[in-house]
Length: 489
Image (cartoon, rainbow, N blue to C red; front, side):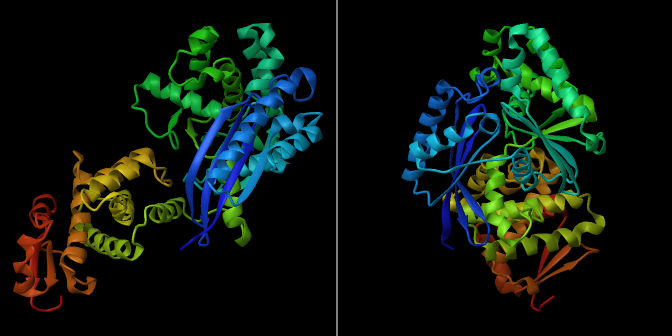
Protein backbone atom coordinates (compact mmCIF):
# COMPACT_ATOMS: atom_id res chain seq x y z
CA UNK A 1 0.00 0.00 0.00
CA UNK A 2 1.35 3.39 -0.96
CA UNK A 3 1.71 5.98 1.75
CA UNK A 4 -1.09 8.44 2.26
CA UNK A 5 1.13 11.40 3.16
CA UNK A 6 4.38 12.40 4.80
CA UNK A 7 3.33 14.31 7.88
CA UNK A 8 5.53 16.83 9.70
CA UNK A 9 4.71 17.67 13.32
CA UNK A 10 6.30 20.70 15.00
CA UNK A 11 6.02 21.12 18.77
CA UNK A 12 7.24 24.49 20.03
CA UNK A 13 7.54 23.94 23.75
CA UNK A 14 8.56 26.25 26.55
CA UNK A 15 12.01 24.71 26.87
CA UNK A 16 12.56 22.60 23.75
CA UNK A 17 11.45 22.57 20.14
CA UNK A 18 10.86 19.18 18.52
CA UNK A 19 10.00 17.89 15.08
CA UNK A 20 8.80 14.42 14.09
CA UNK A 21 8.17 13.20 10.55
CA UNK A 22 5.87 10.24 9.84
CA UNK A 23 4.63 8.37 6.82
CA UNK A 24 0.94 7.61 7.22
CA UNK A 25 -1.07 4.95 5.40
CA UNK A 26 -4.74 4.47 4.55
CA UNK A 27 -5.10 1.57 6.97
CA UNK A 28 -4.26 3.97 9.85
CA UNK A 29 -0.76 2.64 10.36
CA UNK A 30 2.32 4.83 10.32
CA UNK A 31 6.09 4.75 10.05
CA UNK A 32 8.48 7.09 11.89
CA UNK A 33 10.83 8.76 9.40
CA UNK A 34 12.87 11.36 11.26
CA UNK A 35 12.94 13.26 14.53
CA UNK A 36 15.03 16.07 15.95
CA UNK A 37 14.97 18.40 18.94
CA UNK A 38 16.73 21.53 20.10
CA UNK A 39 16.75 23.39 23.39
CA UNK A 40 15.45 26.93 22.74
CA UNK A 41 14.44 28.08 26.27
CA UNK A 42 11.47 29.93 24.82
CA UNK A 43 9.99 30.70 28.25
CA UNK A 44 13.20 32.30 29.50
CA UNK A 45 12.29 35.78 30.71
CA UNK A 46 8.55 35.16 30.47
CA UNK A 47 7.95 35.30 34.23
CA UNK A 48 9.80 38.61 34.48
CA UNK A 49 8.54 40.41 31.37
CA UNK A 50 5.13 38.83 30.76
CA UNK A 51 5.98 38.27 27.11
CA UNK A 52 8.51 36.35 25.06
CA UNK A 53 11.82 38.16 24.74
CA UNK A 54 13.59 38.96 21.49
CA UNK A 55 16.44 36.63 22.42
CA UNK A 56 14.16 33.64 23.06
CA UNK A 57 12.17 34.37 19.90
CA UNK A 58 15.33 34.48 17.79
CA UNK A 59 16.43 31.10 19.16
CA UNK A 60 13.04 29.60 18.39
CA UNK A 61 12.77 31.18 14.95
CA UNK A 62 16.18 30.00 13.76
CA UNK A 63 15.47 26.52 15.09
CA UNK A 64 12.08 26.31 13.38
CA UNK A 65 13.39 27.61 10.06
CA UNK A 66 16.01 24.87 10.10
CA UNK A 67 13.44 22.23 11.04
CA UNK A 68 11.08 23.30 8.25
CA UNK A 69 13.97 23.17 5.79
CA UNK A 70 14.73 19.60 6.89
CA UNK A 71 11.06 18.73 6.44
CA UNK A 72 11.11 20.13 2.93
CA UNK A 73 14.15 17.99 2.11
CA UNK A 74 12.18 14.96 3.30
CA UNK A 75 9.18 15.93 1.18
CA UNK A 76 6.66 16.74 3.91
CA UNK A 77 3.15 16.99 2.42
CA UNK A 78 1.40 18.46 5.44
CA UNK A 79 2.44 20.27 8.59
CA UNK A 80 0.79 20.18 11.99
CA UNK A 81 2.45 22.88 14.10
CA UNK A 82 1.56 23.68 17.70
CA UNK A 83 2.84 25.93 20.44
CA UNK A 84 2.26 25.29 24.12
CA UNK A 85 2.46 27.12 27.45
CA UNK A 86 5.12 29.75 26.73
CA UNK A 87 3.23 31.18 23.76
CA UNK A 88 -0.12 30.57 25.46
CA UNK A 89 0.89 32.67 28.47
CA UNK A 90 2.72 35.43 26.57
CA UNK A 91 1.11 38.87 26.31
CA UNK A 92 2.67 39.22 22.83
CA UNK A 93 1.41 35.88 21.50
CA UNK A 94 -0.27 37.32 18.38
CA UNK A 95 2.94 39.06 17.33
CA UNK A 96 4.84 35.84 18.00
CA UNK A 97 2.49 33.75 15.84
CA UNK A 98 2.65 36.27 12.99
CA UNK A 99 6.45 36.28 13.13
CA UNK A 100 6.70 32.49 13.11
CA UNK A 101 4.34 32.12 10.15
CA UNK A 102 6.10 34.86 8.20
CA UNK A 103 9.56 33.39 8.79
CA UNK A 104 8.73 29.68 8.40
CA UNK A 105 5.70 29.63 6.11
CA UNK A 106 3.95 27.34 8.60
CA UNK A 107 0.88 28.30 10.62
CA UNK A 108 1.14 27.52 14.33
CA UNK A 109 -1.82 26.74 16.56
CA UNK A 110 -1.64 27.60 20.24
CA UNK A 111 -2.95 24.70 22.29
CA UNK A 112 -5.15 25.36 25.28
CA UNK A 113 -4.13 23.67 28.50
CA UNK A 114 -6.88 21.08 28.06
CA UNK A 115 -5.79 20.36 24.48
CA UNK A 116 -2.19 19.96 25.55
CA UNK A 117 -3.25 17.48 28.22
CA UNK A 118 -5.47 15.57 25.77
CA UNK A 119 -2.77 15.18 23.13
CA UNK A 120 -0.34 13.99 25.78
CA UNK A 121 -2.93 11.43 26.88
CA UNK A 122 -3.38 10.19 23.30
CA UNK A 123 0.37 9.78 22.87
CA UNK A 124 0.53 7.73 26.05
CA UNK A 125 -2.63 5.62 25.90
CA UNK A 126 -1.88 4.33 22.40
CA UNK A 127 1.63 3.20 23.34
CA UNK A 128 1.42 2.17 27.01
CA UNK A 129 -0.62 -0.88 27.99
CA UNK A 130 -1.95 0.37 31.33
CA UNK A 131 -5.67 0.68 32.02
CA UNK A 132 -5.59 3.05 35.00
CA UNK A 133 -3.06 5.80 35.69
CA UNK A 134 -2.41 9.46 36.36
CA UNK A 135 -0.51 10.86 33.39
CA UNK A 136 1.71 13.88 34.02
CA UNK A 137 3.72 16.12 31.72
CA UNK A 138 6.12 18.55 33.40
CA UNK A 139 7.05 21.13 30.80
CA UNK A 140 8.98 24.36 30.94
CA UNK A 141 6.10 26.72 31.73
CA UNK A 142 3.20 24.41 32.59
CA UNK A 143 2.38 20.95 33.87
CA UNK A 144 -0.50 18.78 32.74
CA UNK A 145 -2.30 16.00 34.61
CA UNK A 146 -4.71 13.46 33.12
CA UNK A 147 -6.80 10.96 35.06
CA UNK A 148 -7.14 7.74 33.06
CA UNK A 149 -9.55 4.99 34.12
CA UNK A 150 -10.27 2.00 31.87
CA UNK A 151 -8.00 3.69 29.30
CA UNK A 152 -10.46 6.60 29.01
CA UNK A 153 -9.61 10.22 29.78
CA UNK A 154 -11.87 11.22 32.68
CA UNK A 155 -10.36 14.53 33.77
CA UNK A 156 -7.46 16.77 32.80
CA UNK A 157 -5.91 19.98 34.03
CA UNK A 158 -3.03 22.25 33.08
CA UNK A 159 -1.37 24.37 35.77
CA UNK A 160 0.88 27.31 34.74
CA UNK A 161 3.98 26.03 36.49
CA UNK A 162 6.87 24.13 34.94
CA UNK A 163 10.56 23.50 35.50
CA UNK A 164 11.76 26.64 33.72
CA UNK A 165 9.35 29.30 34.95
CA UNK A 166 9.49 28.03 38.54
CA UNK A 167 13.26 28.40 38.42
CA UNK A 168 12.84 31.93 37.12
CA UNK A 169 10.27 32.74 39.78
CA UNK A 170 12.31 31.51 42.73
CA UNK A 171 15.88 30.94 41.54
CA UNK A 172 17.26 34.05 43.23
CA UNK A 173 16.26 32.68 46.65
CA UNK A 174 18.98 30.03 46.63
CA UNK A 175 18.68 26.35 45.81
CA UNK A 176 17.00 25.08 48.97
CA UNK A 177 14.47 27.90 49.22
CA UNK A 178 13.78 27.84 45.46
CA UNK A 179 12.86 24.15 45.53
CA UNK A 180 10.80 24.64 48.68
CA UNK A 181 8.79 27.46 47.11
CA UNK A 182 8.38 25.60 43.81
CA UNK A 183 7.03 22.59 45.69
CA UNK A 184 4.66 24.72 47.77
CA UNK A 185 3.35 26.57 44.71
CA UNK A 186 2.50 23.35 42.87
CA UNK A 187 1.14 21.64 45.99
CA UNK A 188 -1.25 24.55 46.51
CA UNK A 189 -2.43 24.37 42.90
CA UNK A 190 -3.02 20.63 43.16
CA UNK A 191 -4.94 20.95 46.42
CA UNK A 192 -7.65 22.77 44.47
CA UNK A 193 -8.20 19.82 42.08
CA UNK A 194 -10.95 17.66 43.64
CA UNK A 195 -10.81 14.80 41.14
CA UNK A 196 -7.21 13.97 42.10
CA UNK A 197 -8.73 11.97 44.96
CA UNK A 198 -9.73 9.40 42.32
CA UNK A 199 -6.06 9.03 41.37
CA UNK A 200 -5.02 7.92 44.86
CA UNK A 201 -2.42 5.11 44.65
CA UNK A 202 -2.69 4.85 40.87
CA UNK A 203 0.61 4.47 39.00
CA UNK A 204 2.02 7.59 37.41
CA UNK A 205 3.00 7.80 33.74
CA UNK A 206 5.40 10.63 33.03
CA UNK A 207 6.28 12.29 29.76
CA UNK A 208 8.55 15.20 29.02
CA UNK A 209 12.18 15.99 29.75
CA UNK A 210 11.96 16.02 33.54
CA UNK A 211 10.46 12.53 33.69
CA UNK A 212 13.00 11.14 31.23
CA UNK A 213 15.89 12.73 33.13
CA UNK A 214 14.79 11.17 36.43
CA UNK A 215 14.48 7.78 34.76
CA UNK A 216 18.02 8.07 33.39
CA UNK A 217 19.30 9.00 36.83
CA UNK A 218 17.57 5.95 38.30
CA UNK A 219 19.11 3.72 35.62
CA UNK A 220 22.53 5.00 36.60
CA UNK A 221 21.99 4.58 40.33
CA UNK A 222 20.48 1.11 39.89
CA UNK A 223 23.33 0.00 37.66
CA UNK A 224 20.77 -0.82 34.99
CA UNK A 225 22.13 -1.27 31.51
CA UNK A 226 20.91 1.64 29.39
CA UNK A 227 17.84 0.44 27.61
CA UNK A 228 14.71 1.85 26.06
CA UNK A 229 13.16 4.60 28.16
CA UNK A 230 9.61 3.99 27.04
CA UNK A 231 8.00 1.75 29.62
CA UNK A 232 10.85 2.06 32.10
CA UNK A 233 9.73 2.38 35.71
CA UNK A 234 11.17 3.42 39.04
CA UNK A 235 9.81 3.59 42.62
CA UNK A 236 8.03 6.85 43.36
CA UNK A 237 10.04 7.15 46.59
CA UNK A 238 13.22 7.54 44.53
CA UNK A 239 12.25 11.09 43.56
CA UNK A 240 12.49 12.56 47.07
CA UNK A 241 15.88 11.04 47.87
CA UNK A 242 17.37 12.01 44.52
CA UNK A 243 16.00 15.54 44.79
CA UNK A 244 17.74 16.00 48.16
CA UNK A 245 20.98 14.71 46.66
CA UNK A 246 20.86 17.04 43.65
CA UNK A 247 20.01 20.04 45.83
CA UNK A 248 23.38 19.62 47.52
CA UNK A 249 25.26 19.85 44.22
CA UNK A 250 26.34 22.84 42.21
CA UNK A 251 24.92 23.23 38.70
CA UNK A 252 28.36 22.55 37.23
CA UNK A 253 28.56 19.28 39.15
CA UNK A 254 25.09 18.26 37.98
CA UNK A 255 26.16 18.77 34.38
CA UNK A 256 28.72 16.00 34.82
CA UNK A 257 26.13 13.43 35.85
CA UNK A 258 25.17 10.93 33.19
CA UNK A 259 21.51 11.37 32.40
CA UNK A 260 21.27 15.11 32.96
CA UNK A 261 21.62 17.14 29.78
CA UNK A 262 23.70 20.28 30.22
CA UNK A 263 20.75 22.56 29.51
CA UNK A 264 18.65 20.76 32.15
CA UNK A 265 21.15 20.86 35.00
CA UNK A 266 19.88 24.22 36.29
CA UNK A 267 16.16 23.42 36.16
CA UNK A 268 16.11 19.70 37.04
CA UNK A 269 15.41 20.31 40.74
CA UNK A 270 12.47 22.59 39.97
CA UNK A 271 11.00 19.91 37.73
CA UNK A 272 11.54 17.27 40.41
CA UNK A 273 9.80 19.51 42.95
CA UNK A 274 6.74 19.46 40.69
CA UNK A 275 6.83 15.67 40.53
CA UNK A 276 7.29 15.38 44.29
CA UNK A 277 4.23 17.56 44.83
CA UNK A 278 2.23 15.23 42.56
CA UNK A 279 3.55 12.16 44.37
CA UNK A 280 2.67 13.57 47.79
CA UNK A 281 -0.84 14.33 46.55
CA UNK A 282 -1.74 10.89 45.13
CA UNK A 283 0.79 8.50 46.77
CA UNK A 284 1.68 6.20 43.87
CA UNK A 285 4.03 3.27 44.32
CA UNK A 286 5.61 3.44 40.89
CA UNK A 287 6.34 5.88 38.08
CA UNK A 288 6.39 4.74 34.44
CA UNK A 289 7.99 6.68 31.62
CA UNK A 290 6.44 7.36 28.24
CA UNK A 291 8.69 8.48 25.44
CA UNK A 292 5.60 9.56 23.55
CA UNK A 293 3.50 12.63 24.18
CA UNK A 294 2.05 15.60 22.33
CA UNK A 295 3.55 14.90 18.89
CA UNK A 296 2.45 11.30 18.91
CA UNK A 297 -0.95 12.39 20.23
CA UNK A 298 -1.30 14.76 17.28
CA UNK A 299 -0.31 11.87 14.99
CA UNK A 300 -2.92 9.51 16.43
CA UNK A 301 -5.56 12.21 16.26
CA UNK A 302 -4.76 12.74 12.57
CA UNK A 303 -4.70 8.98 11.87
CA UNK A 304 -7.65 7.78 13.93
CA UNK A 305 -9.73 10.84 14.75
CA UNK A 306 -11.71 10.74 11.51
CA UNK A 307 -13.27 7.39 12.37
CA UNK A 308 -14.09 8.02 16.02
CA UNK A 309 -12.16 8.17 19.27
CA UNK A 310 -8.44 8.08 18.42
CA UNK A 311 -7.63 5.31 20.90
CA UNK A 312 -6.56 1.87 19.65
CA UNK A 313 -8.30 -1.19 21.06
CA UNK A 314 -5.02 -3.08 21.58
CA UNK A 315 -1.68 -1.33 21.99
CA UNK A 316 0.22 -4.53 21.21
CA UNK A 317 -1.74 -5.52 18.09
CA UNK A 318 -1.58 -2.01 16.64
CA UNK A 319 2.15 -1.74 17.33
CA UNK A 320 2.85 -5.13 15.76
CA UNK A 321 0.88 -4.08 12.68
CA UNK A 322 3.03 -0.96 12.34
CA UNK A 323 6.18 -3.03 12.78
CA UNK A 324 5.07 -5.45 10.07
CA UNK A 325 4.48 -2.61 7.64
CA UNK A 326 7.75 -0.88 8.43
CA UNK A 327 9.81 -4.01 7.83
CA UNK A 328 7.62 -5.51 5.11
CA UNK A 329 6.64 -8.67 6.96
CA UNK A 330 4.46 -10.93 4.80
CA UNK A 331 1.31 -10.93 6.92
CA UNK A 332 -0.15 -14.04 5.26
CA UNK A 333 2.96 -16.06 6.10
CA UNK A 334 3.06 -14.59 9.60
CA UNK A 335 -0.57 -15.61 10.15
CA UNK A 336 0.11 -19.21 9.07
CA UNK A 337 3.21 -19.56 11.27
CA UNK A 338 1.42 -17.93 14.20
CA UNK A 339 -1.59 -20.24 13.91
CA UNK A 340 0.64 -23.31 13.84
CA UNK A 341 2.73 -22.10 16.79
CA UNK A 342 -0.32 -21.36 18.94
CA UNK A 343 -1.96 -24.70 18.07
CA UNK A 344 1.17 -26.48 19.23
CA UNK A 345 1.29 -24.35 22.37
CA UNK A 346 -2.38 -24.95 23.22
CA UNK A 347 -2.10 -28.69 22.59
CA UNK A 348 0.70 -28.91 25.15
CA UNK A 349 -1.09 -26.91 27.83
CA UNK A 350 -2.57 -29.84 29.76
CA UNK A 351 0.86 -30.85 31.05
CA UNK A 352 3.03 -27.80 30.43
CA UNK A 353 4.58 -25.22 32.76
CA UNK A 354 4.02 -22.49 30.16
CA UNK A 355 1.29 -19.95 30.88
CA UNK A 356 -0.76 -17.15 29.33
CA UNK A 357 2.09 -14.64 29.33
CA UNK A 358 4.22 -17.18 27.45
CA UNK A 359 1.44 -17.52 24.86
CA UNK A 360 1.45 -13.76 24.30
CA UNK A 361 5.23 -13.79 23.92
CA UNK A 362 4.96 -16.61 21.37
CA UNK A 363 2.20 -14.86 19.42
CA UNK A 364 4.25 -11.68 19.23
CA UNK A 365 7.43 -13.47 18.20
CA UNK A 366 5.60 -15.39 15.46
CA UNK A 367 4.03 -12.19 14.13
CA UNK A 368 7.29 -10.28 13.78
CA UNK A 369 10.07 -12.84 13.25
CA UNK A 370 9.73 -12.45 9.48
CA UNK A 371 11.11 -8.91 9.73
CA UNK A 372 14.66 -10.25 9.65
CA UNK A 373 14.51 -10.83 5.90
CA UNK A 374 14.06 -7.06 5.45
CA UNK A 375 17.75 -6.80 6.39
CA UNK A 376 18.85 -10.02 4.66
CA UNK A 377 17.50 -13.59 4.48
CA UNK A 378 20.81 -14.90 5.80
CA UNK A 379 20.80 -14.83 9.62
CA UNK A 380 17.23 -13.52 9.44
CA UNK A 381 16.44 -14.61 13.01
CA UNK A 382 19.32 -12.56 14.40
CA UNK A 383 18.32 -9.57 12.30
CA UNK A 384 14.73 -9.81 13.54
CA UNK A 385 15.86 -10.02 17.17
CA UNK A 386 18.00 -6.92 16.66
CA UNK A 387 15.04 -5.02 15.20
CA UNK A 388 12.88 -6.00 18.17
CA UNK A 389 15.40 -4.52 20.59
CA UNK A 390 16.36 -1.50 18.47
CA UNK A 391 12.95 -0.17 17.44
CA UNK A 392 10.05 1.01 19.53
CA UNK A 393 7.42 -1.69 19.85
CA UNK A 394 4.63 -1.10 22.34
CA UNK A 395 2.20 -3.10 24.44
CA UNK A 396 4.61 -5.24 26.47
CA UNK A 397 7.05 -4.45 29.26
CA UNK A 398 10.72 -3.99 28.42
CA UNK A 399 11.46 -7.33 30.06
CA UNK A 400 8.82 -9.01 27.90
CA UNK A 401 10.23 -7.43 24.73
CA UNK A 402 13.62 -8.82 25.71
CA UNK A 403 12.00 -12.26 25.94
CA UNK A 404 10.44 -11.81 22.49
CA UNK A 405 13.89 -11.07 21.10
CA UNK A 406 15.31 -14.19 22.74
CA UNK A 407 12.51 -16.36 21.36
CA UNK A 408 13.06 -15.02 17.85
CA UNK A 409 16.85 -15.44 17.92
CA UNK A 410 16.89 -18.73 19.82
CA UNK A 411 19.82 -17.42 21.85
CA UNK A 412 18.71 -17.61 25.44
CA UNK A 413 19.63 -19.14 28.74
CA UNK A 414 16.02 -18.90 29.93
CA UNK A 415 14.39 -22.37 29.80
CA UNK A 416 10.94 -20.92 29.08
CA UNK A 417 12.23 -18.81 26.19
CA UNK A 418 14.10 -21.84 24.87
CA UNK A 419 10.87 -23.85 24.79
CA UNK A 420 8.98 -21.05 23.05
CA UNK A 421 11.79 -20.65 20.54
CA UNK A 422 11.60 -24.34 19.65
CA UNK A 423 7.82 -24.11 19.26
CA UNK A 424 8.27 -21.17 16.89
CA UNK A 425 10.96 -22.99 14.90
CA UNK A 426 8.81 -26.12 14.75
CA UNK A 427 5.81 -24.15 13.46
CA UNK A 428 7.91 -22.42 10.83
CA UNK A 429 9.63 -25.66 9.81
CA UNK A 430 6.36 -27.55 9.41
CA UNK A 431 4.46 -24.87 7.50
CA UNK A 432 7.23 -23.33 5.40
CA UNK A 433 10.13 -25.77 5.03
CA UNK A 434 7.99 -28.90 4.76
CA UNK A 435 4.98 -27.07 3.37
CA UNK A 436 2.54 -29.04 5.49
CA UNK A 437 -1.00 -27.57 5.56
CA UNK A 438 -2.37 -26.89 9.03
CA UNK A 439 -5.10 -29.47 8.40
CA UNK A 440 -2.44 -32.16 8.01
CA UNK A 441 -1.02 -31.70 11.51
CA UNK A 442 -2.51 -33.59 14.47
CA UNK A 443 -1.68 -33.93 18.15
CA UNK A 444 -1.95 -36.89 20.49
CA UNK A 445 -1.84 -35.45 24.01
CA UNK A 446 -1.14 -38.61 25.98
CA UNK A 447 2.07 -39.42 24.11
CA UNK A 448 3.06 -35.84 23.19
CA UNK A 449 3.15 -37.07 19.63
CA UNK A 450 2.84 -34.79 16.64
CA UNK A 451 1.25 -36.60 13.72
CA UNK A 452 1.96 -35.24 10.25
CA UNK A 453 0.37 -36.38 7.02
CA UNK A 454 2.84 -37.18 4.27
CA UNK A 455 4.18 -40.55 5.22
CA UNK A 456 7.60 -41.95 4.43
CA UNK A 457 8.19 -39.69 1.43
CA UNK A 458 7.95 -36.55 3.56
CA UNK A 459 9.91 -38.10 6.40
CA UNK A 460 12.75 -38.92 4.03
CA UNK A 461 13.51 -35.26 3.29
CA UNK A 462 13.64 -34.16 6.94
CA UNK A 463 17.45 -34.51 7.28
CA UNK A 464 17.93 -32.33 4.20
CA UNK A 465 15.83 -29.39 5.40
CA UNK A 466 17.52 -26.23 6.66
CA UNK A 467 16.27 -26.60 10.23
CA UNK A 468 15.88 -30.35 10.47
CA UNK A 469 17.62 -30.17 13.85
CA UNK A 470 14.37 -28.82 15.29
CA UNK A 471 13.08 -32.42 15.43
CA UNK A 472 15.82 -33.31 17.91
CA UNK A 473 15.37 -30.06 19.87
CA UNK A 474 11.61 -30.58 20.15
CA UNK A 475 12.21 -34.03 21.64
CA UNK A 476 14.92 -32.80 24.01
CA UNK A 477 13.26 -29.62 25.32
CA UNK A 478 9.55 -30.35 24.92
CA UNK A 479 9.30 -34.13 24.86
CA UNK A 480 7.57 -33.96 21.47
CA UNK A 481 8.04 -36.80 18.99
CA UNK A 482 7.05 -36.62 15.33
CA UNK A 483 5.13 -39.35 13.54
CA UNK A 484 4.68 -39.21 9.78
CA UNK A 485 1.38 -40.80 8.81
CA UNK A 486 0.12 -41.94 5.43
CA UNK A 487 -3.29 -40.50 6.28
CA UNK A 488 -4.55 -37.12 7.40
CA UNK A 489 -4.68 -37.03 11.23
